[in-house]
Amino acid sequence: MTVQGQVAGRTREARTVVVGGGLAGLLAARSAARAGRSVLLLEAGPALGGAIAAGHVAGVPLSTGAEAYSVAGGHVDALLEELGLDGSAPDAAGSPTVVTPRSGLGSRIVSDAGTHPAPSGSVLGVPSRPLARDARAVLGLVGSLRAALEPLLPARIGSRPGASVDAVIRARCGARVAERLVAPIVGGVHSADPRTLELASASQPLAAGLARHGSLTAAVRAITAESARRGSPGTRVRSLAPTMGALPEALAAEIRAHGGEIRTEAPVRRISREADGGWTVALGTESVSTEELVLAVPPDTARDLLAEAAPSLSAAIPQAPAAAVRLVALVVDAPALDAFPAGTGALVAPGTAGVRAKALTHVSAKWEHVQAAARAALPEARSPHVLRLSYGRPGETLPDPSDIVDLALADASVILGTPLRRQDLLGSAVIDWDRAMRQARPGHAEALTEVTALLTRPEHAGLDLAGTWRAGTGIAAIVRASKPTSSTTPTTAEGTPS
Ligand SMILES: Cc1cc2nc3c(=O)[nH]c(=O)nc-3n(C[C@H](O)[C@H](O)[C@H](O)COP(=O)(O)OP(=O)(O)OC[C@H]3O[C@@H](n4cnc5c(N)ncnc54)[C@H](O)[C@@H]3O)c2cc1C
Image (cartoon, rainbow, N blue to C red; front, side, top):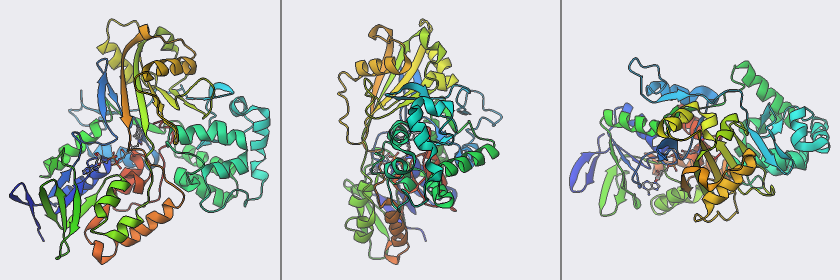
């Protein structure tokens, strides 16, 4: 059946309307368009991509939101291949292409113990070999010995259903592992508080491994052995050159190529249910009627939009509050950074004296194409480097934008062990992400199960909900969930500081 939609007085077929032009919405619109349906995608903002965005700083093209994707499961690589972004097309020269991080650099953990290489072979910060030299450097001898006792503890210790990351790790591995290794990852990568984030939401494989083996250390060893067996122990993330912005662009191009329509600056204000079972989507004074509706918006927006049309479903959508993140991109002329003193970057333990940032990515160390782009854009500079610092742990007040560039220079100086001054600065940008990072609260997984069950009810026929709050944090989780065989189990994008 073809349903007619009214937009600005015109009549159009609008079999599938997708609200939200972030990754989840673009993928939903692409699937519908490829299935031969007529598609209308409505995005509130001026640009597509949501948290996948790009810009220029001092003339250097940079990803200003998500900067990489997890290779876990191979879902994103498969999508990029389908979109012709893997560099294999015969006319690919000069086109966007997949890139891997510079090898052999590793990353660092900054804590009150100083700046040390992140222990190898860990999952969510839990080390597989707590007595190894790299783990001892961060944990100290006492912390390492305490962590080494973990496999000897009874399986029931810390393994209460729904327990937070902090509760489980602290009880099993000790305070130092919780504070110096796990908290930097949960705050820096997930933008979450380890005291309220469920272990199963932070790392489903780790929670499942604990249930299976009765030990976190054993679970980490099994997970790392499995990824080594699959041949991907080091390369856990990849990106797109010149920026991740190539992904939403390619998805939008494919939607349009299949006849789909995309409108930006088209915020949806209201949704109502029609007597014949269709849905009406109101944008200002215009409205569109459709038999299939996908809401790919943040959870609070989905709750508000469905409050009248589907009250039971609206109430079941989990709150998943936003964690505001403020990023500072710095382009500095600093030959001392040619040695990549913090490898690809660093995660900072909460409460570390003298550093307010929660993470630093040495972008031009991690990505060779960014280093090449910086050199090409700034030929007069001695050695341009690109850094990205992030601020905003849950519950923290964000630093004032008026002096955050000076704060970022000071934090980068400590983390990199190299003084960086105002006169070294070639360009900077401050980027705010107020609503994109969502924190799964205890009970999130159960709420998602209820949402999935409610969506099968006849009164919700034709409606679907998508987005990071349902699929799990990160590009790989959203791509995986968009497949017909998807599961909605939350997963994570490890190693991708926000
Ligand atoms: C700073 C930052 C860094 C990150 N880094 C990484 C990384 O390196 N690797 C990784 O895998 N993941 C990363 N992530 C996470 C990842 O980017 C997100 O999980 C993912 O992009 C979210 O996609 P989404 O479609 O669910 O939501 P969003 O991208 O938030 O898209 C939702 C869209 O809905 C639109 N919208 C909202 N209300 C309405 C309305 N009423 N009408 C119409 N449209 C509306 C919004 O404008 C937005 O475009 C990062 C996130 C952030 C914020």
